[in-house]
Length: 131
Image 1 (tube, one colour):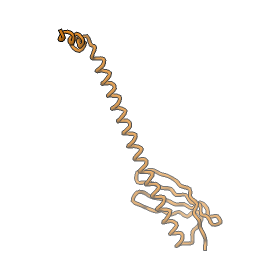
Image 2 (tube, one colour; image 1 turned 90 degrees about the vertical axis):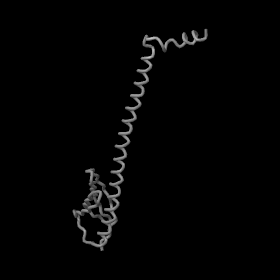
Image 3 (cartoon, one colour; image 1 turned 180 degrees about the vertical axis):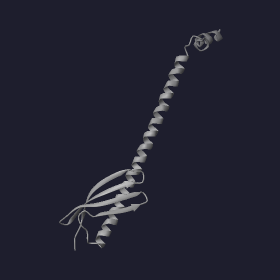
Image 4 (spheres, one colour; image 1 turned 120 degrees about the horizontal axis):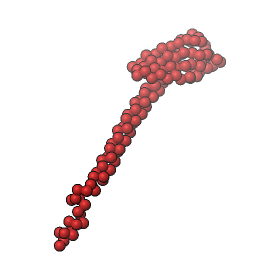
């Protein structure tokens, strides 16, 4: 008696009217959506990480070239308007052009080119005292 009751209650598993198939399709679709979203998120995170690494390289190149430029102008006081300085580093090249020298300030453009081809331009004012 008990066996018939269990079999009747769970009969939807045994008959072939297609009751289970929609649930399986729903679960497979849900898994497909989750996997696709995970792959897209991973690709976006990888791209963001690459951009952040390039930004760190740009900042490092700027700081290194700024320090080297300040040391070079302290040694060579003969700096003129429209002078251009180039600094090469393992991660890229920095080109510094002097826009104008006014009072005790030198206005410069730092063009940073990384080894991956990213280019960024800083406009920077540097204290400058002619002797």
